[in-house]
Image (cartoon, rainbow, N blue to C red; front, top):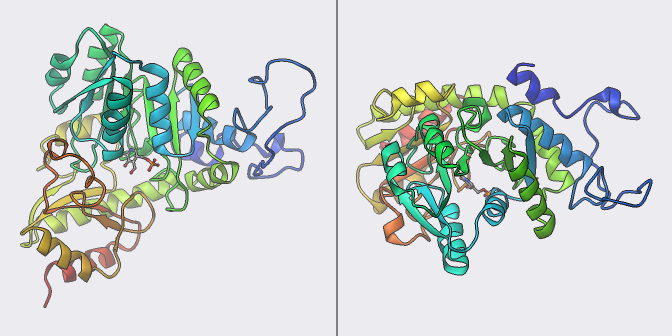
Length: 382
Ligand SMILES: Cc1ncc(COP(=O)(O)O)c(C=O)c1O
């Protein structure tokens, strides 16, 4: 099956449903009758372990990332925490991209380091040699995001996978920004992919969720066990919402990407804008890598306006269609100010490049002329 057919069909089969349901029913039962005594990890026994609606979603997500296994969580952060708790222990070291979602840095710094003595070295992973140089004998994980949040930097997944494979270090890629429509890190050599399904995968800003995808049996078993032991599962209703959202992933992403390219070009030519970062612009320092490892360039555009906080404030208050809000990947356009919002809690040393004039725009699927007009009237007030 092609990708867009998989988004509609994998995990749901009306022929297997007793009443011929065309969509997988929301299976709300907390517990399931068993035919016999014995191992409750096999089949359905209790919804914290497995659930029919969630399992349908997990099968679809695994197919879309080209992975053998999928695990759905109650948040992207629950998925990340489960990976960290399953594969790291006190005394271990992690190499991570310096430009990362702030919540991931908080997990590493305030939880894994301060409470569990797992040290992290943040590197400029746009150069694979920096990743290689940071690896120590006790490095037990390499954690990347590409494109990264919020500066849309890329790292070379194939090249980093060569480094990690030769040293037997698990390599995790957060694929939230690209979505499986534009990039499949496991196919490029990563061992584990995580998603905040809250974003493009669900696509409608009405569910918080996360997922881990892997083809490695050992990692899957460990993370399944951690999820069972800690309980951060995606609810049946959210699983249904995400299954429904996924059906339009390919059509939504096509539109997000077309709109983002037009918006990025418009902003690049605007006199109130200092710099635009979008992997699809030739001016992006890693444009060639984006073309090589991604099938599209995504729907996120970051840009720096002339001025500082005062100019940013007056710009965002003039916006009418685009909403000032964190999160991304929904059908509606959202804008946020990383320095004070998503990345506001980070210590200064972990905020490299997150300047006061930076804005992160999640370009929605509205008519692009309306998005551009809104940006234009807010950037150049009469
Ligand atoms: C790249 C990235 N990864 C992970 C997360 C965490 O996901 P969630 O908010 O679903 O816990 C986010 C949230 O913004 C994100 O942007």
